[in-house]
Length: 245
Image (cartoon, rainbow, N blue to C red):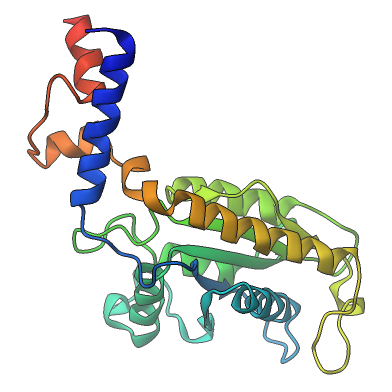
């Protein structure tokens, strides 16, 4: 068999597995995005205001959005935390979503504890389902001082750990207290235009990866552990292992 024929058979087998998988998309034809935010104890939270701006943009781009309020989350590992209403709501949002927006204030050079708390409540596997794997992710941060990228860099690391597709663009708003008017709307600026860029890119990545999301996270080790039948002539990993035998 020629190399081109083998590649075509492998692609066809992967596509068939992807088509056979149960779809998790809530709505065809638009990117479905859940936005999550981390806030301080202040009533005027700039990370929340940034996410609200992002949600407005996403809705105008044809997306469905949900914003999660983490203020009632318990500490991970506390008694009954899995059954806590806020934890159940967070996980339901994650399973519903096709993509996410994470926004955190930078505190002492890192993401806030409340932002990390939300991520710690999302297991890699939940009842046989993966609440984050294969979903797209956009990361943003706000700072009280000069522009920094420590929080978004950490969010990228966490997104990779959660097996998400983190888009290349990102937003970092410096001196966030100067960027919003009294009504809580973001003033016209390069910072606002960057958020527009990031949301536009998130929608594009979500729509482009949607037909291939299952295939992109289809792993040989997991197929083997699940006892799924392996087509020796069409499974790329099986072919590679056979050649080493």
